[in-house]
Every structure is written in C-alpha cells, then in structure tokens.
Image (cartoon, rainbow, N blue to C red):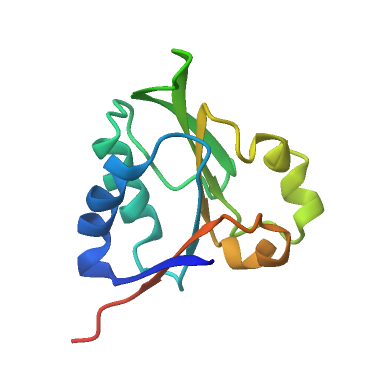
Length: 137
C-alpha cells in the first residue's frame, strides 16, 4: 500500500513535525512539488524535530548532505538524515553514483529526496510520498 501525504507550503513544517516521531530509520521520504512549494522547508523542520544540530540548506549544488540525528537504531547505531536534492540530476544512474540505492532501507539512515519524481520508477515500494504545493492566496 502506497503511503502518501499532501500539504501546502504553510503546512509543511507541521507535517514534518507530525511525521518525525513515527520514523525509526530505513524510511525513504520522496518529496514532490514545484519550486517554492516547501521541500527544503519540510526537510529543515523534519531535521529539527529529529534533533539535527547543523543548518540544513538545499543541497542543489552538492546533491547530498548527511546529518546525525538524536535517534539510534535498536543496535545502538546513530541514525543519520540523508538529504538529497535531485533538481540538477538528469537520470537515476547519475543519482545512484552517490550510492543512493545502496542506502535504501538501511536502519541507520532516513532518506529525504527532493525532486523525487525524477526517479519515481526506481524508488522502492515502501517509499513515503509527500506532495507539496505552494499556497494560493
């Protein structure tokens, strides 16, 4: 069964804070939405809710950033938030050079992918989709 959530920009932070306590490691969050819809805003709020101390910026030019969270696996390993931005990526092969598919499902990584629709057909079945839209005034 496909898990998905929908939120406007003004709801992105609240959705992230609501999802954070449910995450245990191994999850893949696929963020989909146009420019300015709140993908990075969602990730920043999620990171704060998971105890990330560093500043989370859009990794558009570096593609991937990892941050330690306050969470630990059942085996006591630190769980990391892996933040990818595929805006400039043209293919799954280009993204997978970073070892993307090797990290999927690993219990010590929570993966957040901005512009995930670019690799939608390659994402695992258990991926959680989050569709974000700009608020209309």
